Image (cartoon, rainbow, N blue to C red; front, side):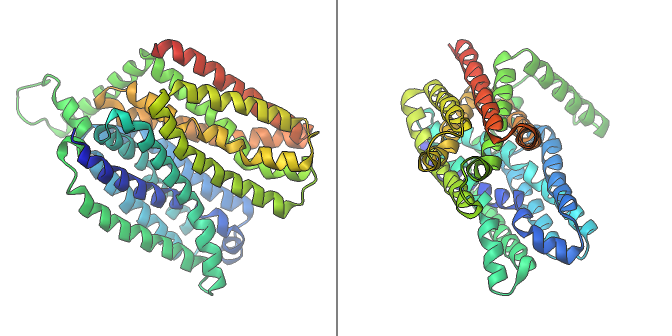
Length: 416
């Protein structure tokens, strides 16, 4: 694959990652404003966020199939277009029910970005630069998550409110969709349709001419069933899915309750505690970039050991609620970085374990693991905090990291 296309593809999917992740966390920064204007409780607004996540999770494997069987580039453009439509609908929502419909539409759009991004990177980027490409992709995703938290307060300060903020983000998405539509034309079919071409190389099922609609549905069902059998018979894919899930549980425990740890456990006032938690995410994003560079030099496994091993130690130390507050702040600042360090390595391992015709579906499966972890971690760790204290919750984070470390050891045996 000519390396000249790699920068174009990395830039294309990275910009898409910013936009899609901005849609993913569109609502939370505006909860108070949405509640007042749409007469919705905090729980009801939480349901709206849940609708986005539910639709994203449900859409992963179907859109992974479409991406692999037809076109990664088409799924990328479709993802941007539908997500932008949902964001625009949210900006003009007159009622809470309308907001729920907008959330579902956004979810359909967001669901397509991972099944399109990862196969494009896999097809375009040479092996020697693969982890760095995944780290750039992850970094821009972190930037996208921060966009609504910057745009909403700015829009409110300028007098445009949450509708102006949502509208501005929708305009950003629309402009980038246009840019992507132009850029995609420069991506060769060998990259844009890599999964479909891999499937085209397989023997034809019939020489009787174009199949009917029923025949197409039967073929699609057969391929999905065949993919299910492939996953069941491929231990490394099952193990990686489990690892992405366990990693997500630990990550969401940290992101959700790091500020609570500093506040409730170490007596730091809530405002500086939240600031430390925000800076922690920035540090993690920067470390993620470095993790890709190191993984290309050392291979992915050392990054898994270093990341999860250090998380076990840091989370256990912090769970004691006994270290000086200054030391606790320093440890929290690097807490998320232990997770982010290994993200490019996990992506590279998933890529290397995938057949070319299954890259989109396999990364969709990993995203199901990520979504599952994000769904279970906040309530579970929140229960521990309410019933036993924040220290016990972070013992749970350390234990989760230990499970991830054990899974990494098993993974190393399969990779060898």
